[in-house]
Image (tube, rainbow, N blue to C red; front, side):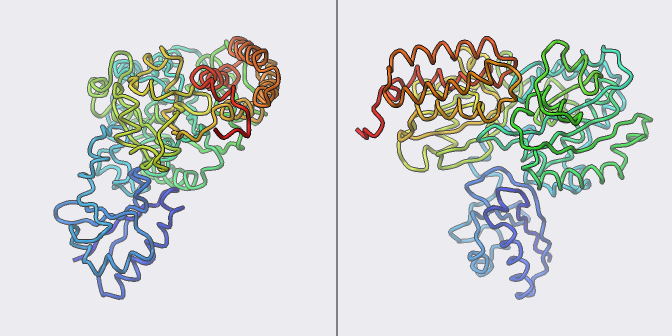
Length: 517
């Protein structure tokens, strides 16, 4: 009987030694005369357990982790091929791991289960069922299904995806485009990368469906260059999808056409903003465009363009295959469906947690995250990337819902959650926010380009105790100017973390530096 073992081929697992573990498993099996099939699957997103090794048994997969190279021989000695063995790294049936079992995985249902670049594996787990349905529908029917699902842009803006698609469908243009924003640059986020490394066909399928819905025949995935593995796997998956008839001139024999390419960015955070991204795709410097016109009317090369985030497009196949009502049955009020939250920073259990909207931030931090890795109390949490507000423990019962977060001056953004313990200096964090804007501003508008530089200078004076009250008032005014006068969210939202730090942690702006009391 062949022993089937799964070892992730994904950036986090690889950085923790997954390749060495895989190599040693092969050697150990050969030395023991065991017939082995090694599958390089994606990661399930339980990062504190990576490399997570799984063994297929008649009762399902059994998990072991985190496995290091030095553990491999002892796993064989314990008979891990049988699954439920007495070993310190034995975790039991994978699907029964509480951290995983409590999640509501819709978009990420296949993540870590399949070989990412195997079309056969993808199809065996429901892949391309959405596209097979899409080729039988009219464009308007496809747009209507996305509208009915309640899907909102998962890149951060939360704009209704179906409305954006309707605008592009109705727009006149000699050519239309689908652009996937995969320039995932927010601190503490990795959900886009997980999709592209662990389930790339899902993104490809979502983009083809988007093309059929709005009449676009060309798509681009604008990928950050810091994701070389995603580039490798996406490129291979696109080649295989084209060869299998899921891309090209005659998709599934329907006579409809859609092509897809990966284009690498050059490491500029601002190119995560949709109009800067389009400039970069056109071969220009990544500068923000004034709106209107919206990209849906005049986007890439002046043509109607859908610009959606990876997670928005990845949600589409299940909306088609399971029906929009199924997707809309998750969530609350206007926040429908699920959001993959990414737990990072000072946490015991970091990783990806997909939940329906409506759970509390406290559940994420305490129940899933397990509190801080240092064992100290949590003092602050930043949700939504470097432009998101800081939250204090008093706000941890806020529901994970776009409107609930907006009501307290915060954003859910892309779902990144970065946790800090009570040793954090929030004046330093406010300074970091302004400094980040100094480094990453495209420089087109004055409030962002000059305001961020002045912001760093003012915070430095506050931290040095120089005319503290006057400089605090100046910083507040400066934040208002950036929020009201900046051309895009880069300058307009940089004040969010600054102002929240000033409001929730005022003592850090009054403390004499060097005073550790």
